Amino acid sequence: MEIKHLNSWLEFKDELAKLQTYRKSLSNKSGREMPPILFRGHQNSCWELRTTFERYTGKDEIPALEYYEMANTILPNISNHSDKGCYLNLEGVREWAKMLRSAFLYSLPSREYMTYLRHYGFPSPLLDWTKDHYIAAFFAFRDVLDMTRRVAIYAYIDYIGIGKTIEGSGPVILTVPENDLFPERHLRQKSCYTSCLIDTSFGVTFSSHENAFPKSDSDENLLWKFTLPTSEKISILHELDEMGINSYKLFNTEDTLMETLALRTFR
Image 1 (tube, rainbow, N blue to C red):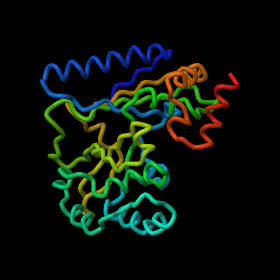
Image 2: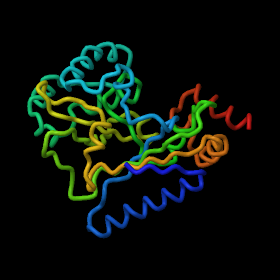
Image 3: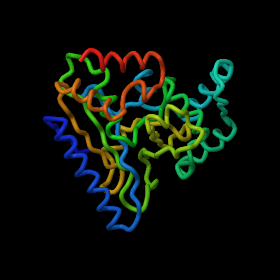
């Protein structure tokens, strides 16, 4: 991971332009379209890339089947209170989890349900990103505490070669394919998700992304971390609002409407 401590919002824009030029040059050189750059905003530059499952439970790993079984137990409650039509094929998950490393070649089972859980706050082993660097910046600055001095915006490229490799025994980061059935809010936020998988004696296991990055080679899991001072928070949020990036646009609730109006009113 390359870390850059920046002094201003303008410097971040400059670094972003360099990163986009770098990706474009790789595409031109290889003759293939490179995976998109994914972004993630952190309200504190000290925070690691941890999923909500890790933060909620304090655990780095959980067997995939165990997590899916827990997700299955709450499905009736969700169905009683939501019209999302969530579905989980637990038998298919059991077969997938037995495949060990070969399972990494296939899409994450029931990914619509898995992304639904992550997007609406149930502790999840998926790490959420966005394709829009400005949306990532919004989430970095939105609720930053006064005592926090710097935020972080991560940039991630899945691979720059011919694809991901699954050889060896270490964890593998995989991007969850998008689907038209993903929640509407997912589309508003241009969300993407990654999972980190490893094969263990328990079968396919969700692992921490932090366990994968140190073992990455130069062609996979490219990660940049840009830290920015929080002193520009208000001016940045106003600039993003003028671009149409605000709480109401991203969440579309009455609460976030009031939050957006407050930002515009109390300058």
